[in-house]
Image (cartoon, rainbow, N blue to C red):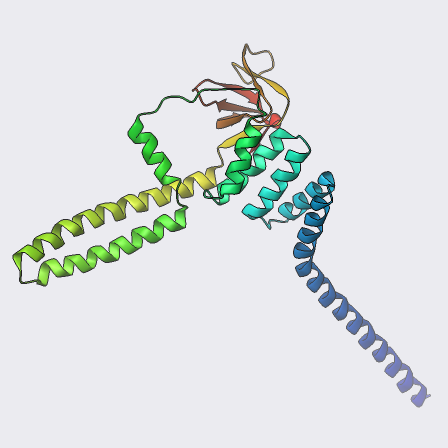
Length: 267
C-alpha cells in the first residue's frame, strides 16, 4: 500500500510538472508571437497594398495603429490605401496624422496636396499679420524636442560667453561676449517657448477632418439651430470646444459654428 501511494504521488507530481512546462512554453510562445506580430502584420499589410487589396491593407494598418504602434510611415501608408479607395476624408486624416508626427515628411505633404484637390470646399484662409504668420511657420519647422535641444545648446553657449565676459582682459572681447551672450540668451528663451508651443500643439489635438460627404454647420449645439453653412468631406476644422454630442468648430476664414462630433475625427 505504501509503495502504491508513493508511486501515485510521483505520477501526480510528474503530471503537474508537465502541465507547468506546457503552460510556460505557451506563455513564452505567446509573448514571442505578440512581439513578432507588429512587424509581420505590417509586412502583410504592405503585401496586400502592393497587390491592390487596399481595403484589406487599410484594415491591417488600422489594427496596428489601434495597438498604439504608430509612426509617420504607418499613417502615410494608411492614407495611401484610403486615397486609392477614393475615401478622401480618411486619406487626408492620415496624411495629416503623419505630418503631425513628422512635419518635414515631404511624401506625406505631397500626397496631402493631391488629396486636397478632391475637396469641394475652397475656403480662403484668414489674413494674418505677416510677422505672426512667419513665426507660426518657423515654429512648425521643428518638433518640441528639437526646439528644446536648441534652447539648451544656446543656454550653454550663453554661460560660456558670460564666463568670457567676466574674465577676459580685452575690452573689445568683453563687449563682443556681452552682446553675443545677450542674443544667445534671447534665442534660447524663444526656442524654449517654441518647444512649449509645439508640445501644446501636439497634445491638444484641436484640429479635425470632416468625415461625411456633406454636413451642415449650426448656430447652436442643436439640430434645430439655424443653418450657417455647409462643409464637405475632407475639410479641415479647428475644434474650439464641445458640449454633449456637439463640437464648436472654426474654419480657415474664421467662420464658426456647431457640428455633431460624430461627423468629424480629430487629427
